[in-house]
Amino acid sequence: MDKINLKEFRSIDMDPFNGAMALISGKWKMNLLFCLSEMDTMRYGELRKTLGGITPHVLSVKLKELEQNELIIRHEYPQVPPKVEYTLTDKGRTLIPILRSICDWGKQYCMTHQERDTN
Image (cartoon, rainbow, N blue to C red; front, top):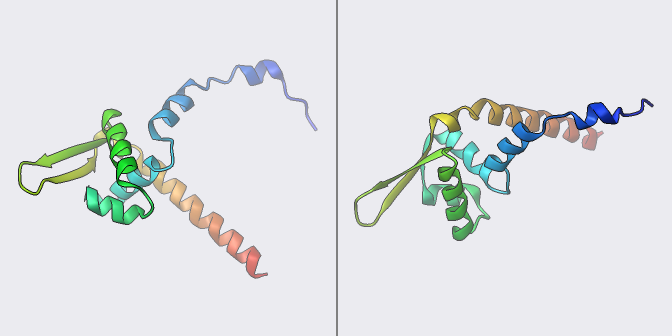
């Protein structure tokens, strides 16, 4: 087995990766982004139903974080009861190919493991 060259290993610039992960990491952010990439615009209640196990508090926090990171837009309509919709920003839409790639990888991974389990 080849030895790891520590000088090369330490020269990896992790800043871009760490910066990107800071924007999208966590239990629910990628799920929210994926939902919005598939449905374009969704209301709070639709997101909550689609995601299932997310609490209202966590959903609100994650939506605010994604909005602060300029990945989604929150549009509130001045009516009673309040109507709020969420959609991806242009910056958020740049994640769609990555999200679809992850989804494709997941499909392939699941198919491979299902085949192994049935044999």
